[in-house]
Image 1 (cartoon, rainbow, N blue to C red):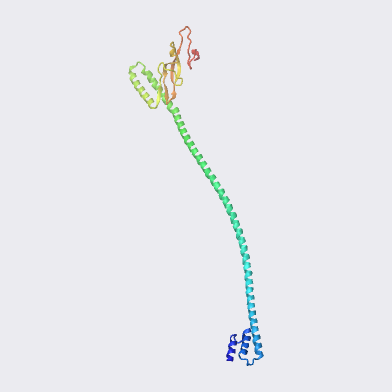
Image 2: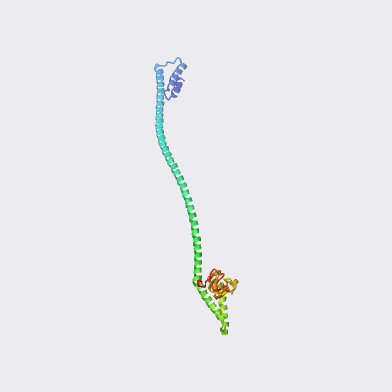
Length: 285
């Protein structure tokens, strides 16, 4: 019983009780068997063995703690290095963000300037469009003016001389018509009618004022004067020597006429009235 108890007590510590457990085991054995003789060396060995175990355990713990602390210190140093690197990296990132913000501000300013330039270009294009439209209208007006000038040139340089010649021929035929030769009278009347119809179809008007018509200085050209004692006939047409021609109110050729001039019935012939193109003294005419 005693051997088993002692062996069990020592077995708990792997053959040597650790620390106070071995010494307590010896005391328990003495208390269980007071008559048992316990050698002093057993007590000392139990006490010394237990203290050394505690000391070794404490030293091992301290060593492990030192290793842990060293590892922690190494980890803290590495962490501080990493934090420094992170702070430097954060500084670089902040500088990069500052540059990005500055670039964004520059881009915003450039965008505003570009918008202003585009607006100016649009206004300039609108102005150029208006100018082109004005140029187009001016070209159209110039083209119409050129057409008018060309038509007027043709009318004055080609048509008018032709019409004048036709009118001269018509006048000569009228003179022949008034002749007493019956053999040519009908033929002359027919040709004169054809010429008159041609002139009328071209929008032309023959100026042939009758006797006693009011003199029109625009449509009539006085080439002769005829004295008369009737005051009411003064300044009126006596006869038409050459026919005139007009087209749409434009005088191509005025009619050449003789005009009455009132003369008092006295020994010396003087005029009591005078028109705008006539003179009292015939030599002044």
